[in-house]
Length: 108
Image (cartoon, rainbow, N blue to C red; front, side, top):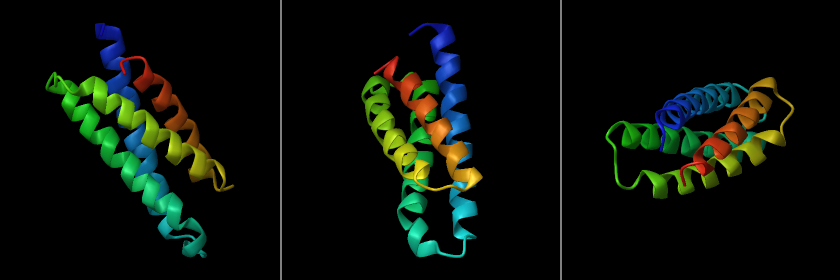
């Protein structure tokens, strides 16, 4: 991985983690939380795997490529779920998740 790819991926992972955490928090404040349950769950999963991969990259983990594959899968699932909801926070999260999928695929 080049330095540029590394820094781009770390930044993208951090942005995705932040977007997922924001979406998670905003979903908890929605009136129909039952409808948002899967979005909330995937927001947490996605934020956690993005943070874990970011840490693994900074430690030069030999498992980073494998983790990037998993991260891309989780981010894709989160993006697909968020895309179903019309809330601005969900749409922003979906866009950020799909950007993260592409960044992860570059090193997977």
